[in-house]
Image (cartoon, rainbow, N blue to C red):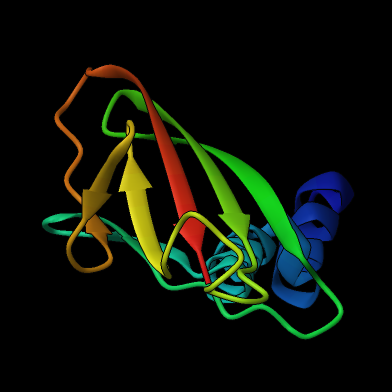
Length: 113
């Protein structure tokens, strides 16, 4: 019996952060909190901001493309020049899935909630 081998195997079984579980947990939680999830058709963006947050910025590498995503709260639609929704590279988008072409370089996404 080799003490070093038995010690790492015991550690992997007991400590989930050594087995990769924590990475998957972090990924799942961050996607749920930020509301940015991969989808077959592209990147699904469904943020849910608590009242105490005005917005946030995310830089997400997806399908070989860097997406600069800025989520902004619209306090009063009459005062803002944007309605609630998504704007991708300056163009309004219907729905909440950003179609991302592989290796498209960089995309700018504004999300108004």
